[in-house]
Length: 351
Image (tube, rainbow, N blue to C red; front, side, top):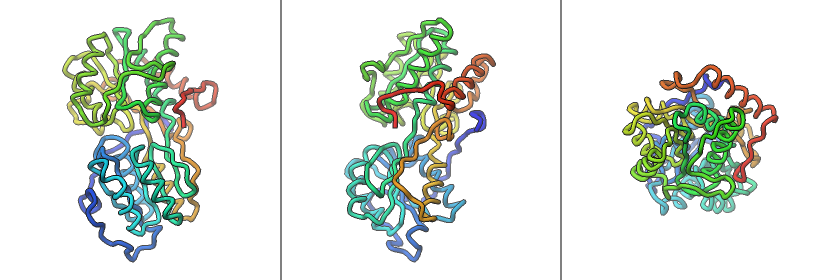
């Protein structure tokens, strides 16, 4: 699948299919067969997080259209909602429960153990149980391309990345990004610096949460003061603060993550969005729903890669003029080398 052909739209979230917090779910047990319905539990980022809660929900809405399954989301607003919401999802009688993010690992494991006949899928986290399918993404492969791109377009010779927390799904992006920068330096004999992350020590710059936009703006402003003009925030909603800082300072671009930021962020940020490192959660959700309906569900992890189009980088959109045909060609060549195995992007956080 061509990189330029991939894009993700924003799904319209209808109130009738969203269950907020821990309120009672209608149709408990229902008349529908268990394989005909699915419940999704978000983490505390909420349903419209411009990240994998949103993209997972879009995938389930796609499954509604294509497979006729009835999908509803249970939205967690804080840590105390998580376990009760997973329990509520199980009580719906649906045959598939989708949970999103590392915060839901323990509640998912507990409910899976107590309900061995129910199928579970957890997005962006691994849980080892016979009825739980991890949905994970080797984002380092795509962020490697983004790092190479960043090194190729920087005018200052300095790029940067930061995370919301030092967790494998976050640092996996950062490992790939700095390796991509290093590859560009190797190929071109340059010395582009990557601030914010040391792959060797597995430590770097973190805001400590995924929701405080001001923290993202402050940290990004600090990087800009050090000369960085391309920045990769791996911090959910916090990344919007990075986009705000880039817009305010001028001459700075952002690499978004999970979804295409050009489509999911407010339009005011489009002028600073260079590309995005994408997780194609949508296709994974449709595939898993179909497997449950066909009685073909297994706990074998779904691992998104460049080869299966589970990860990618988005089009360059308004900043395409920054990317020369030569640089774009090099990136496409790297993409094919990763798919063929000629280049192996390694990370201790790889799924």
